[in-house]
Length: 295
Image (tube, helix red, strand yellow):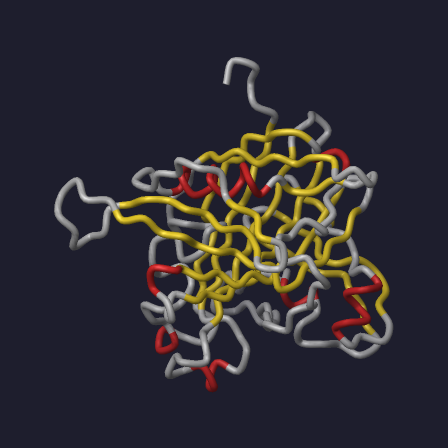
């Protein structure tokens, strides 16, 4: 399949992760899905992008190290709404995004999987609301007024949710609350509710941290998201890490990988044993193209 090379770590990411020197490039990605990294670091760190974008084992005799993904957020300064995360100028505008499931991994083993982990319940990860589905959604990127491009979360979050889950209904635009995040309100049918009875939920996505790096034809980013479901408070808190690598094609399309890692909460029985590592990782390949004029 088509291959691409994801960009190297930014200086800010290297410094905040405690890496003293970084050379080379992060990750060579070859679908389906396989990422090999060319990062060399003076002092290798478990939470480096080399580990996070690494390939999974393809068989019993595959002895390569598997990805070592850690929580370790790069804390944002006043960017709870994820608007300081910079995207390349060639992404500006609207895209039709086709999702295709590649891998679902449980790095700590099945014993750590639970109903409270991100991805188990519907919409417990708003960026992958129904793991296993392979929909088409709309992504939009807009100029930020300062020469950069940012994600239009106001349109993207509802589109992703309703594309993955056709029983979720969003009637109002998400509410942006500075210092808090984006609040998405939607209604859905609970499994034990009477037929036709819809329950309203207010789900808040808070960006705890983010970083990105752009090359001429490639882009990669990492986001740390804390999601809260007001209906399930004080439970209903989900921490997950979103890793995205995109490569610009010669024909105006874009291909890439979306990797979402879900982490446990302190109240979970296996939280200490998990040691800041994900209990579930979901990989999707992405194909982006401009929507047809008729769409």
